[in-house]
Length: 146
Image (cartoon, rainbow, N blue to C red; front, side, top):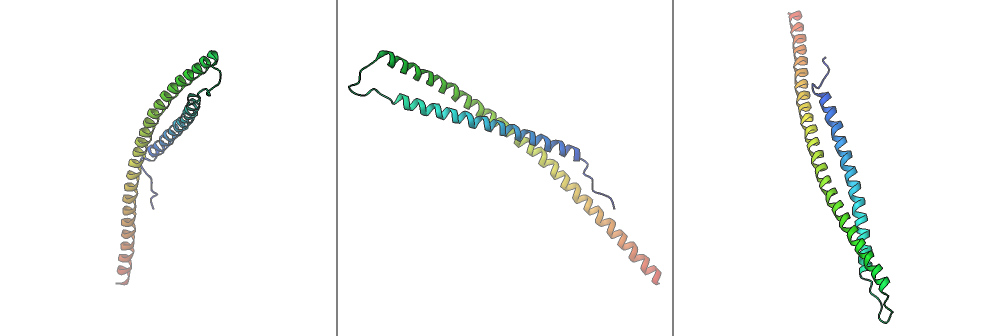
């Protein structure tokens, strides 16, 4: 009996390895994106808290402190802009990585379908061989009986 052998087994293994690599890259981008979004959210909350801070009525106004507060808000505003841009870029990277994973999956799936067809063809061939052997044995029995 002939053993099943997929003619594109090496290609399928290579495609599976490529798919795993693309999934790993996607996971890394997702991790970096998650961290960037978390940092952006923290800075935004800090900014909102500081921006909402107004001097109390009746307290003395100190220009140096007000200037320092305003500079700190400006720095936070700039950092939020930078982090927003980083998140935007990481979202684009994630989208590209997702497309690569989808393409790699399609390649793997196409080869799996070819393997399934080869396996069905092999099974059919094996059934025919078994039937031929059974027919030959039956024919030999009938010729020996007669």
